[in-house]
Image 1 (cartoon, helix red, strand yellow):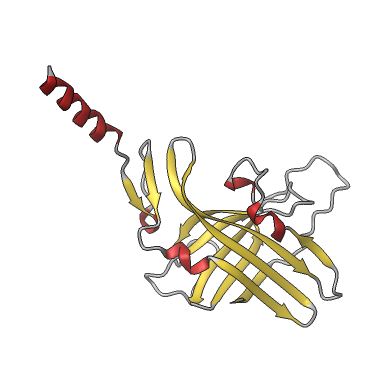
Image 2 (cartoon, helix red, strand yellow; image 1 turned 90 degrees about the horizontal axis):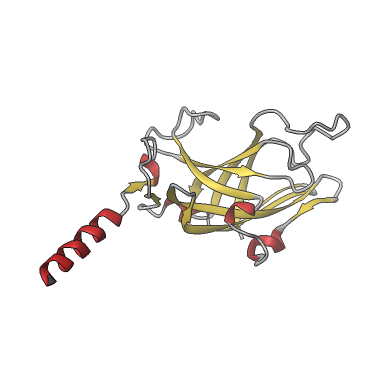
Length: 196
């Protein structure tokens, strides 16, 4: 009886073990309970507070790495973030930086920046200046006053103290209000950001 219990325990332990898929190789069918893991610690390149300034215009982003986030049928390491944007006239249009540690959020995906999909060089948006073996990270980007806009942000590591981001619209707005503003409050484009 003791041998049967030990054998059953071992079998259960092996059957519950999830398959680990490296983050940059996550272009395969994802089996149930798989873990898309940042095995190379690539996401660490983006953790911290980053700042862009051009005249009065300022864009600040704070990013945090979240390990083993549960997506229901699989797990994944992701980055989450919040941001502040000041326009050329010195007006603060968005400031969610205080929400980076907001305990009332029901989960990491409620942050204004969330996700971590690996992109290779020729995936949209293309990065022709990227090396052949280089990959970037794509996340969702949310304007808290225009949640109906489908926006995305792509992070590229330049050095330990610089990242380049590309902010863009990723589809149609999802509002039925004909009077809802459709333009992006933070201009689409590329921003070279320095770590602060």
